[in-house]
Length: 231
Image (cartoon, rainbow, N blue to C red; front, top):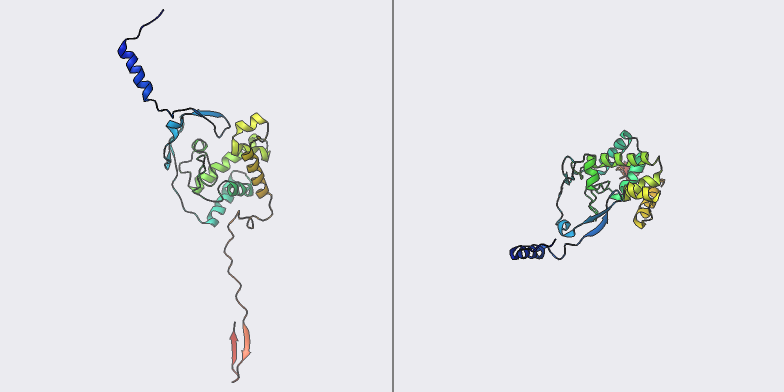
């Protein structure tokens, strides 16, 4: 059966089609779980803001409001949070060193946020409200790292690869994916983790140690007076 569209309907269709921008092409990317995602850049190429919209099924948006914290405070926070969730604090320090170099307001090219570079979707699922708040970021990052270690029965390489490329990619490859970025990431974190001196490597900001005072010398002046000096 054949239908003939009236002239006004054909005109309407042409107008709608012509309104679609030429740049509305479909692009291919890989999300934090290693799954292939197809998106329309025309809908996603927008100026970055400090508020990231909520995903379907999540409680609310993740914000990114800087929160100041001294290096010593960050190290104490990492120590306590890691112990709370039964993850080696030195491993968490190594991850932070590799991910953000201890920059609480770090933002990656892919939109990962904060000290432990949380992908917004992961941050939301873990209940993060402000990704730049060190306490929230580290707590969520350590919990996620602990989940991955448990998932892969303590296999550090697999857990770190999943933290970087997503567990989906690790499961498909049966190990560390053959992605140059992921392999380099695992190597950097493990090298830092197994290094002997966290302070020497910049993992922990060294606590202030006052310089030793100069020695005091005792001399006798020409008139017989005893003089103490440090010169």
